[in-house]
Amino acid sequence: MILIKSLPITWTAEALSKGYIADYKPYNFVDGEGVRCSLYVSGCPFACRGCYNKAAQDFSYGQPYTKELEDQIIEDLKADYCQGLTLLGGEPFLNTQVTLSLCKRVREVFGSSKDIWSWSGYTYQELMKSSQDKIDLLELIDVLVDGRFVEAKKDLNLAFRGSSNQKIIDVQKTLAADELVLWKDGNYD
Ligand code: SF4
Image 1 (spheres, protein in one colour):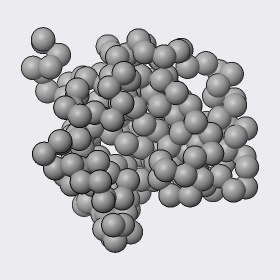
Image 2 (image 1 turned 120 degrees about the horizontal axis):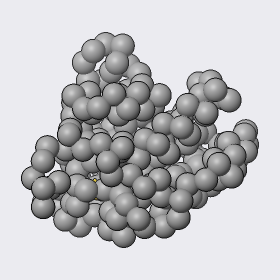
Image 3 (image 1 turned 90 degrees about the horizontal axis):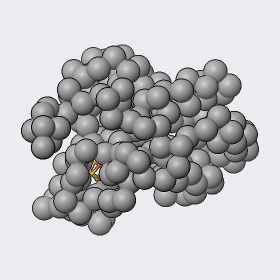
């Protein structure tokens, strides 16, 4: 397949995303720190062996993202006990029509009082070399769990990650320092 042979930094949401989501889960405790609202977008061409959400690799899986759902997410985030929003997939950075719209609105409504986490099959370095929409999304995020799931490096004891190659990155500190800064300075296991 042409797509699989092309470099991931050349893949774009514009070409791939259908604006679908696989699931939305308000108030869960597993997709990052604290109580969170989690949006699972549809479509991920990384196709990692052992992917935790194989059905959501299909860009047509699930249902269209709607303004009504976005309004609901904003309402759900207003709960005092809710720490923030989490983006998962699928690939959030190849669904920026959905994720960028939502994250911009979260910042407009809540400023930095709610945090934003995202998982991605891209590494931080790949995202910074990729299309502007991916960089725009990155700039709105607090914590990025980056990189493909590598079955040979699978470790069930890792916090928030499936395999040991993946990193939990403090995005805002990384952007400010222009060098990779791990969340909690790497003290997260
Ligand atoms: S990057 Fe994540 S969602 Fe995409 S195929 Fe790999 S494990 Fe699945």
